[in-house]
Amino acid sequence: MLDLLIKGGTVVDGSGGAPFVADIGVQGGRIVEIGRISTVARDTVDASGAWVTPGFVDIHTHYDGQATWDETFSPSIHHGVTTVVMGNCGVGFAPLRPGSEDRLIKLMEGVEDIPGVALTEGVKFSWASFGDYLNALDAMPHSLDFLAMVPHDPLRMLVMGERAEAREAASAQDIAAMREHLRIALAAGAVGFSTGRSDNHRTAEGHDTPASIASAAELTGIAGAFEGLNHGVVQVVSDFDLMQGPQNFDAEFDLVEQLATASGRPLSMSWLQRDPGGEQYLAMQARVEAAVARGLPLYLQAAARGIGVINGLDASFHPFMGFPGYKEIATLSVADRAAAMREPARKARILGEQSERLAGDGTPIPPLVDMLLARIEMIAGRMFPLDATLNYEPNVMQSFLVRAKQRGTTALEALYDYFSEGDGSQLVYFPIFNYNQGSLDTVRQMLGHPRALFGLGDAGAHVGTVCDASFSTFMLTHWVQGRAQDRLPLEQAVEMMTSRNARYLGLGDRGLLAPGLRADINVIDPTRLSVGVPKLVRDLPAGGKRFLQKAQGYIGTWVAGQCVAREGEVTAARPGRLVRSGQQAA
Image 1: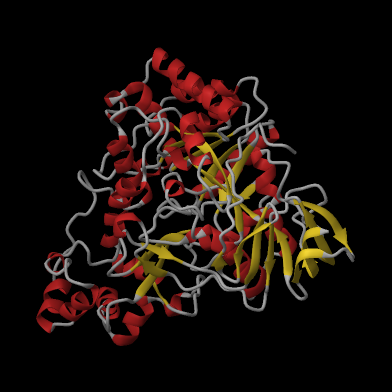
Image 2 (image 1 turned 90 degrees about the vertical axis):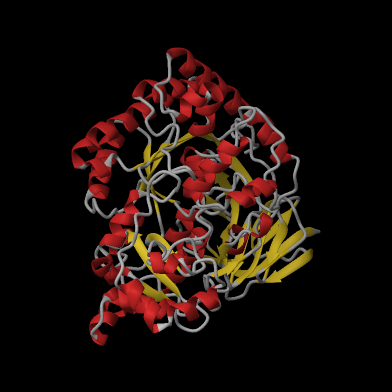
């Protein structure tokens, strides 16, 4: 008898091959048969008319803290994801230098916009080494499988203490110690090493991240930990010194290539069309293509849509947060704030003011925010109402720039009136990156590149500004189903989210629907599929708030043959486990 039989679905097996109609039989957590199956099963799912895919593999999350209090990896579990990778961008909570708990919390709060009070309440530090951290997570029940990279910042803080946060250069002894700690973590099952070099990343106090100035000697020295190993990856986020001008790009990219050469392992980096710097992504593409031609295993992590923020009076950002007249009412309830903003005298005062500087010491807000606010009348052409239509590729005619011109007002006043309507719950979508031309055409080019990896969803992070954990569902609703032209074939979209990412990570037991492989499976009703409306909820520890999107249309998601979500509801099953890189069975 089978444990699970999925009958008559359209199988999109993750290989990139054409979909086909078949049954899938599961026993003991593995797929045992695909075809026409007559064997009886304990659970039978009628998948007629549905897509049957492998579970999605998300290589870019920040569940490092949430995994210690949330067994389900929400919201990823609502979007067909069955395997997540955390420890990205050089930030995390292990290894741990005794007494540095608060410093790591401030680092994660600033870089990844996760409320510090939630992290303080939720993360129960019970580890020191990275191996201890893995063991602590492995001892907890979880819905999904997970892997963890060793982040550079905690590693540097462990070895160098206060000198790391003072951005001092690492000595040869420091580098040797970091390399040894990384080697031990890799032996314990860490999936790799991550480092962050972004000008937009700040601690909660507004300071640069500890490893952001790491030298080539430090990075290549640490990467020596991979020597002789046949597993592990490297992940890098870098602006390539964009704020200092394009002249530093090649030197920064040379450093990335040196890191890849020293590690000998696949390396992926964030790939965005930035603003300013809208042509940088093409320079990255050219350098990657040239490096790959020389044999370097470089990859580009691409997003499914624009990278930006959801603005709202109760969100982390909105255009008026720096105005003195708004600050006076900022502690009121959202509804009372909206009502106060509608007072004619206050409106006139705020619109006559200038926003005070938001970035700087004492705040994690990057200088980019002040730059954007200074250009509000121009960037309003990329600010759009976000409503139940969930249009993530709006055109300029729907923007607040055009709305203002039609009303004969400034864009700032049009935004003001919108935010102050009703109970103040209105949201504005602002794609900062990947939307320079007012469409997702650039994203489509990126997704079609052979070195592109599906990523950058940042699940578990930026919780007050986005819910890009919905990228996987958006790939299907927009790129496969919804876009008017230049769509992605279903089989290509699924291949990107499954087997391609699994291969990059060295996971040979998942990412495909095939006999002998893990039964990580989605059954999806394409006629009901939706990313879900983003809603601010207060379900983090200490009442912390976050945006949550719960997709519709997932009939079920199975991890190792156990159903973890059915029709949008998380089940009691907890089959998820820590995947120790280099140690998993094929």
